[in-house]
Length: 291
Ligand code: SF4
Image (tube, rainbow, N blue to C red; front, side, top):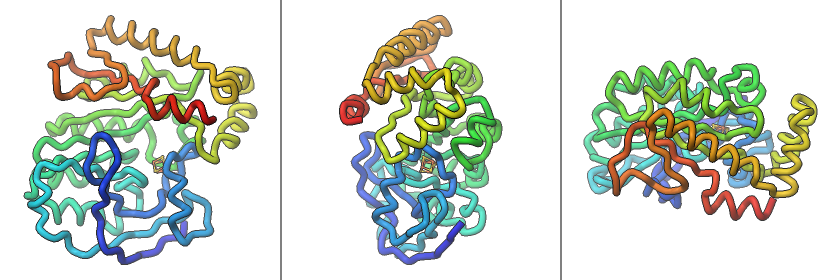
């Protein structure tokens, strides 16, 4: 792993994400090195020749002027990296950001694949109604090890439970859902008692990693090869439509709320947890056409 410490002007980046006004990425690059990384395109904005996943730049930024002026704005930590990479245990740059913005009354969202976030609960608790979200793509630790270098699924679920018990809003992205591999209902069963929101996102092979994933499936799950060809080379959505119906029926049986492709938080009172299906998210539909 190539690690460099760098100086940047600003740690706040205006965000196009529907849920956040600003994104905070205390690192450039991501040592979790997910095979399907949606953020790998960021490499072209770096000076690195190394493959994505094998370098991390540690950011030091100029002090944030008047943090209070961001009161009420939503800031998300970890849009194109993870604020809780193993390097965070040493450099503590995410912790430095949380200290700097303490008392600013921003809406804090943290997305991660790590349990290191538990270290910062003392600070996170001081923010108004913070939300921490973990990504889980499988309950099979061997499959997980093939897909990423992040902490185990078990450790993520334990962290989720710890934060939930500490009174923090917690959520889970069941993402990406690998057709024929991800046991969505099994994951929901494990995490639902500890989550307020559960997002479902299908595997979207729009990056340079499409060939790697299809080769991986061919070599390791040959029985699924035809299904992946149908979905990712013929744009056949039948699998997702069927899975969507199955999950909807399952969540109704459980008494959970289920919504498709919208932000459910503002207009209605839902039974918790809320399962949010992004299979038909506009962006996913558009990019699926281009695959
Ligand atoms: S954790 Fe996110 S940013 Fe990091 S490699 Fe995985 S998908 Fe990419």
